[in-house]
Each structure stands twice: as C-alpha cells, then as structure tokens.
Amino acid sequence: MLIPEEIIRIKRDGKRLSTGVIQAFIQGIVSGKVSDAQIGAMNMAIYMVGMDERECTDLTLAMRDSGQVFDWSGLALDGPIADKHSTGGVGDYVSLALGPILAACGIYVPMISGAGLGHTGGTVDKLQSIPGYNVRPTASRMQAVVKDVGVAITGQTSELAPADQRIYAVRDVTATIESIPLITASILSKKMAEGLDVLVMDINTGNGAFLQTPELAAEMAKYIATVAATTGLKCSSLITDMSQPLAKIAGNSLEVQAVIDYMTGEKRDHRFDQVTRALACEALLQCHSFEQQDQAAKAVSTALDSGAAAERFQQMVAELGGPADLIHKPQQYLVTAPVIRPVMAEVAGYVTEIDTRKIGLTVVELGGGRLRAGDAIDHRVGLVELAEIGQRVETDTPIAIVHAANESGYAMACEHLKAAYTISDDTVESPPLFY
Image (cartoon, rainbow, N blue to C red; front, side, top):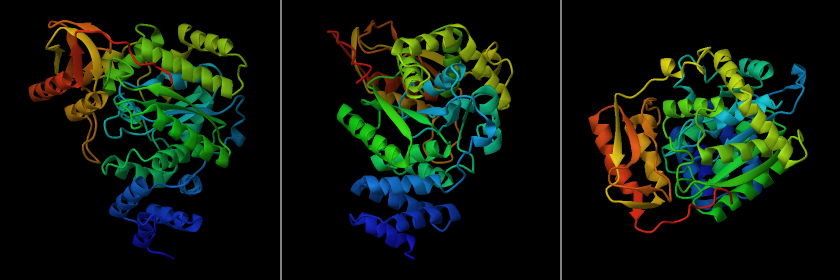
C-alpha cells in the first residue's frame, strides 16, 4: 500500500489517482494516519492539477462512505427527501428560510450545512448564535427531527462524511477553497450521505463568489451534474449573482434576525426573496410535487404568507434545543454588539461597484468568521443596511451600519467598507440576479 506522501506525489506530478489509491488516502484521513499537513498538500495538488470526473466521483464516494449514510426506509416518510446547497457568498442566509419553506410544502429536508469558508458566512455559524441550538446532534436525533418537523438544519455529525470534515477545515486555511473537484466532492459527499432524492444547487458567481465568472459557474454546474448523475443523485443548479451581497445584511446573529423578519413578513429583502423563491420552486418541481412553475410559486407564497414556514422554523429550533419562542422574542435571545454606528459615503453619487469579497472579509476581521482554523466566532458583529449597486448616496448617507465589538473594530470596518465601494457620477444597472 502506498504511503500518503507517495499518493500526494502522484497527483502533484499530474497523474490520475486510481480508485483504490483514493479510497486508501480517505481511509487514512479517517484513521488519523494522514496528517493535516498531508491533507493540505493533497488539496493543493488537486487545486493546481485538477481531477477528471472519474477521480472526482471516486473521491466523492470515498468521502461519503467514510461514515454513516442515512437510511430513511424505516421511517415511513410520506414525501420526497430534498436539500439545497449554495457554493457560498455574502449576505446569503437562504438555507435558513428555504428548509422550513420546503417542509411546509411537504418535502423532508435533512440539511447538513458547513461553517464559514474564507470570506463567506457559514449556516452552522449563524445557527450557533441561537442559544441552546444543537448544531451537531446524533444522526438518529437529526432523522427524528426531520420526521417530526420536516426539516433539520445542522452541521456535520461525527458519523456523516467524517473525511470531509477534516478536508473542509484544512481547505479553509490553505487557500484551496476554489478547487472545483474539492468543492464538488465536499458538497456531494455530505448530500449523498443524507440519502436524498433531490438536490438543488445555488451556484454563485461574481466578485463575492469563489467562481467569479458565469463561465466558471457553468463549468461547476456541469461538473456537479455529471458526478451527481454518475452516483444516482438527481441534481439541478441555478447560477445566481454575487457581485454584491445577496441581502443588505452580513453577520451571524444579524442574519438569524433577518430570516425571522423574512418568514414573519416583517421585512423581505427583494434580491434575497427572489433567489429563495426560485430555489424553492426548483426543488418542488424536481420532486414532482407540482408540474407547473406557477403552482410551485403559489405553494411557496402560501407557506410564507400563512406563517407555516415560520412555524416549521420555530419547531426546528425548539426540537434542537433552542428557545421555544425565538420567533416571537428574537431580541431576548440574539446578542447585539456594543458598538453600532454608520459608515458614511465619502462622496455623493451612485454605487457602481462593490468589492463583495472585501465586505465578507470585513465581517471576518470584525470577528464574525475565522482567520485560523479553530478561531472562536463573535456572533454579535456584522454589517446591516449595505448600500446596493445603482443606489444613490450622499455624503450624509450610510453605505452600511457596522456592528462591532469595540472602537478599533469599527474603525477597521470603516476603512475597509469605504475601499469596497466605488461611487461615481453616472448610475449603472444592477447585474442580472439569475444567469
């Protein structure tokens, strides 16, 4: 059997890895025989050299089979099992809304989500801002919540795709996040471990996405579709814009408040709402819950406007250890930052460009993400009321309101935000939301 460094050497030198060699490397990750340094070296080799679809399929299956795969056959579910995944962006808390919406429409959603990667926020990090919420229940507990409530949004348990957990953590701190084969294997191994019938992908493109051009996003969509089809998973993708934050909010506790406002109808950000509804409709159509787009759209509207989706969200939170009245009293439970102040535009004009990656990194540097693996997260911090492309601003108009832990954090955010916004005399149209 080849030792880990020899397997790394094969890929580093541009050669294809056999099925058996890939399985051996993944088994070494799970057993601890492969170190984090060796995982980082392999990640970089894959990032630099790539993988063909056969290698990526083998990697995906090996990562899936490194742990438990859900079996739903004994639970007598009366509907399809589906999930959604986003490739990552800023101001994107769609998962928190989409899962409960689909549950209210009769879909069962075992949503295993990740922590933040690089400049992007993680669904697990957002959920951890809810007091008592258990983001890592046992697999059996997660399945029970899915059966009873229709949705459970959690992080990876120790039983599900454990190889991916180690690879994922190392990718975050070794500049290997953007690899299409690594993204594909990470996403699909977790989703296949859920025992899904349908997966809907939101593939982001723009300067705030890992895939910065629509062409790269399309390549990713085709790659995922091919690997998913090879493994028997029904999968479709929407390609959406991330050349500006999806919503006007970025930050963990702030985004939980925003999703509560969204589902209760208190406030609905227009770009966020369009993407959420489109993905929900796609999932319903792929599950054959409805045959026509307008039927699916009506069901999504009913789930939101009737309060059914909000009720599913509240039930999920309570079942996973969070407050039973979070929907009604969010301010009682969601912590707030001690420094909350606006950042004003330096000149009057129209917002013509936003460095979305810089916006995300500002949240990270405020403490809302990780600079190193294992860093603690400050759930209070973030940004709200982010100005949008095409918006007119004056010198007394905030381009954002900063929620910071201290004055130095606020000063840093001011500097970064002013550099992230391009303001000109002439207006521009916003880029298309869907490609």
